[in-house]
Image 1 (cartoon, rainbow, N blue to C red):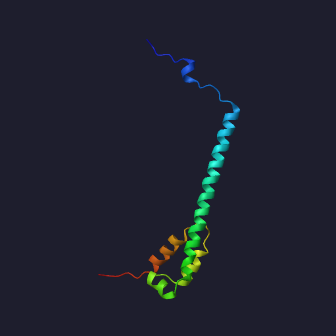
Image 2: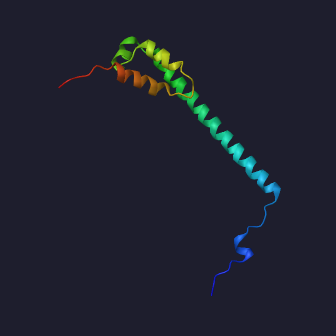
Length: 99
């Protein structure tokens, strides 16, 4: 006995056009909200990073960065992490210690 598929099991009923439009609109709005939140979080993080500019040069030196590096990183485009860029320059400038 060979298996035969029936039309009711293989084909889905067509969706009403309104349902598809609503789903697309929900997906669009959800994506827009997610992007807005990510952009807002990036601005909050950048504002917190700019707080380093209020530190004394001695404290910045203890951290291992210079004021000019912090100023440079704070002016990067918002989609780039200023903290990661500063950390990368700090690692490149760090002298190698031989043991």
